[in-house]
Every structure is written in structure tokens, then in C-alpha cells.
Image 1 (tube, chains in turn purple, yellow):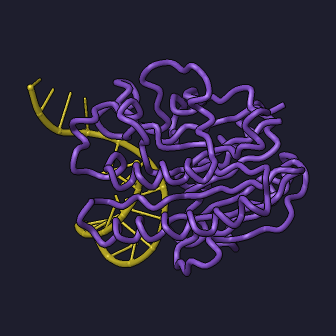
Image 2 (cartoon, rainbow, N blue to C red; image 1 turned 90 degrees about the horizontal axis):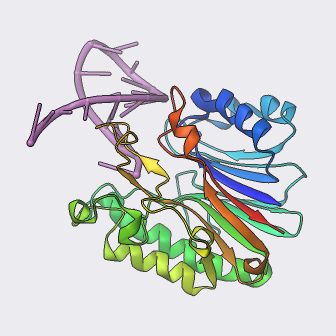
Image 3 (tube, chains in turn cyan, brown; image 1 turned 90 degrees about the vertical axis):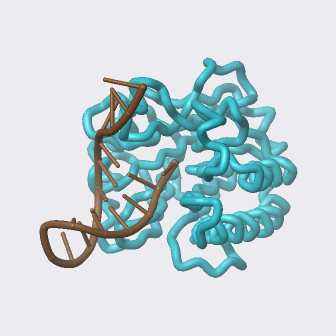
Length: 254
DNA sequence: ATGGCAATACCCTATTGA
């Protein structure tokens, strides 16, 4: 069984890459972030034709998420129950015996910005909802673009990020709080190449110089953890013409 | 050594991303 997450940075632009990727990587489910499409513009037919069921939840210009699965997903939830949000950032569904949650965490922009206040409140809301969700679904995976680099080794230059978002103690405390709920970072269950990242800035030859961040994550519940056999980042996607700035992350389970 | 991007909306320059 395989699950994946990918921030596509506009599904309108990245749809051909997604279809090609699904053909080459027949995962059981994948969650997408930053589709940047209103619901009426979502390319459901092309995704169905590729062999996937899909639920989506979007808005114009920003955000937007989707859950694709080979078998139909049940009990779909959009955004965080109990946290009123104007932005389309989360979608959940049950695929087989696993509760799959796909999320596009807020960026935060700057530590002193209103957007950072929103990021903290959103994370509070996520944790509260997730705690109850995990009680109802022992086999659960939370994946997406977390916009948090959990450790210094997840950032190409930790010193340069001091005072900025993505690596701040506040954000890392929130990431740890998710782990404390009983979740495990699937990527770190295995030995990985040093300087492994999932996002590289389009500017400054970020990818060519491997100046990146590992901010796209797959967290698994205790019940799911023993089934995990691999977790990888598909860097190849970042090498294509017109790439997303994020690479897909894939987890394999027994 | 430095700086180098992309997508969207709306009206061609601004905003946002991370």
C-alpha cells in the first residue's frame, strides 16, 4: 500500500505532470495542496480517467486541496471541524482501513505578521481536532505541506533562518505537539541521505544548489507505524520543465 | 561575490509563496 502527498503549486499548470506521475507511481491515495482552483474548475474527469476517485475543496488563486484514491474514500471532511476557516486547507477521508488527512498548513510569512498569528491558531485548531480524530481512527496518516522544517537538518542553512518562519521554536513546538499525539514522522523512521529536502526556492538556483527545506511530511499513527516499510521524496519531479517547487513524498506500507 | 522565480489576477504591476 502506498500513500503520497504533493504540493502541486497550481493544478491547472501541473495536471499533465500529475497524470504522468500517477501512471508511473500507482499509489493507493495521494493528497494535493495548492490546487489554486475553484471547485467548478477542478479537473475531475482527467483524474477519473487516470483511474482515481477524487474529492476536492478549493478557492481562487490560493490554497485548495484534493484527495485522490483508487477505491472510493468515505466520510469526507473539509477543513478542520471546530475551527472556522475561510481558507481551503484540509481534506480528510477514509481509504480502505486508513483515515487519510491531507493538509496545506499556513505559511506564516513572518514571525511578526498577522499571518503567523493565523498559522499558530490554525495549528491549535488542527491539534484539537486531530486528537479526537485519532481516537475514532486508530489507523491514520496526516500528510501534506506542513510549512515547518522540524529540525535544523531539515533546513539548508539554519543560521540564515533564525528569526524567520518555518524553523522557529514556536512552529517546531507545534510539530512536536503533533508527534506527542502519537504520530511518527515516517521519513525519519529510515536512514535517509543527508540534506534531504522536499522544497526548493525557484530563485537563486535553489534546486541546483540543493538549498531546500524538508517541509512536506507524512505522519503515521501508532497503529500504522509497524506497517511502514519505506518513505521517500521523489526529487525527480523537481527536475522537470515547469516543476512545482515541492517534490512528492511517498510512504509504503505492508 | 552577487543575484538569478513562478503563478495569479487584473489590467501591467502587485501580491504571495517559503
